[in-house]
Length: 399
Image 1: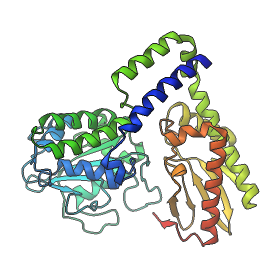
Image 2: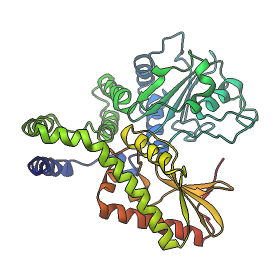
Image 3: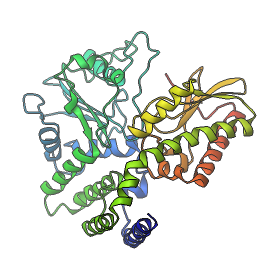
Image 4: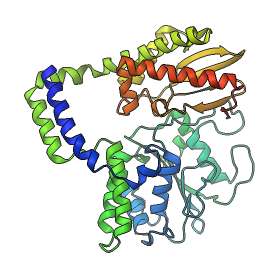
């Protein structure tokens, strides 16, 4: 096993030096690479919009709708469509990440983009729709938002709903809601992934772009390189083959690690919550409980999170300054107060990208190191303590 790790470490070090020299990417120079709203949704909608400054008209749009979404001319007419957000209006419409609408034919495409966040379901909503996807579908088909207020600018009769994630992670049943009864608007083929669909589309965009359009091709290539990195597809062929050779020389050890890595993840997440609970109580002198409170249920949830990469609600409940608060492991780590519900992500970069169901994330993976875990826990406690001292002013009110 030591020999295996030594060989892999030497190989990685060799190619990391090459990557370090060639790491320039104009996109990551300006944005956090996993920013789904300000980066990914805007770049995708920019490329899709025929009136964008890329000057390519609707050729990227046609490739996406016809070849990736598999919608024909009768299902979605590409003439004179509106796309939001766009180059001029960078704001989402009713929180819909990407919206394509043909008002003349009353057709629409909704794309919900998920990098790290989980479904924004509202289980307390007694009057509108609880699920995120069904809520967006209802807004476009009825011309009313979830509070019953008129919202008819993009009202459409025929609506296709898509769910875009890193690696084909389907939405929750709650999020789908009434869409399960609308097969023409939603089915399992409407789950898209960056790993497959977006990478395929970006490659097609590069192929169909004229040779003379070097600036646009360079921009698409930078974005394509970023997606390759995020989906672990950025290893050059010679590095992959050498890695394969190392594994082939260490078959037994490699299989042992692969077969048991789910247990490494389980104990990492279990230790994280256990030590966070212990330090929370000691440092802030408060009591806390796991959620769900039954230890057996909590352990079962950890199994679902680590063995099946399932995003599921679990965490720590505690009282601070006579206020009930919660640290959530649902999607990216976040925290807030329960009533009235005010919430925030953690601001420190070492914590902001941690998602306990995604060990392909660098910061999540580093929790395996006990020293890194202890460092992360102290950052979390400092942010919570500072927020409590300022009457939770940094938290945002949410539904």
